[in-house]
Length: 261
Image (cartoon, rainbow, N blue to C red; front, side, top):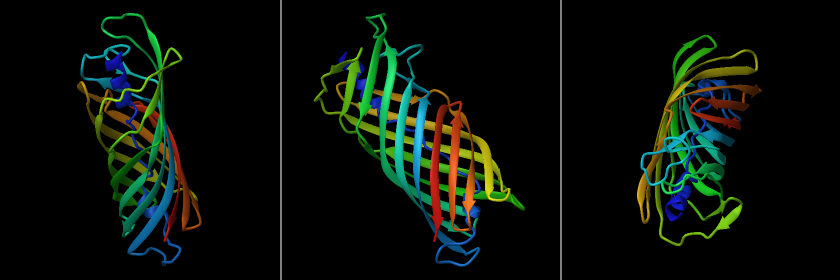
């Protein structure tokens, strides 16, 4: 059971992040304090991201979860503020900083016990951050082809509450160390139609998580390729709203807003 709890703590810290509109560098054409089509502009925004099912697998046989060490029924909510700098409406460099919290429900069995056990985990909010860059590679009128690169990390995790078949499990006081590094490379198309800029594309995701305590083991994403689609709505030339869904490698959706200065 102690080894099983260690796996829970590791799982609490995983979050794949949203891609955003491939055409983001060009959507807002004017800032609050800048002229139209400026050479450089600053944007700020806010994001709420929901992950309903993240495809994870353990590369160690300490605990067998479901089938082939798979982990499922993963949910996470992230709230983050964003700041970015855009050059020539072609390239955007951005950073996001905020917090994430999870709720996890799944059936598990240990190597010495074939009976299924229902487990639930609830974490406090944990600090998380990402940095990334978007580049519009080709543009034909209001049709855009671009790419997005994002690096994501959660440096630590706070105490969580665990339940085994609805009964709380005492928290382990053993020192625990977590390193999460994740990046994705995405490519997609976008087209502006009046105030709307819908987009879609594919992404390659790589997650590496190292957990050290009494035992050391790793988690990684089981599926590397995923799809994303969404749309942005321009509110004048200075503000926009965005909604996005991500499929296959995870089931997730997000809403966000941006303002240009």
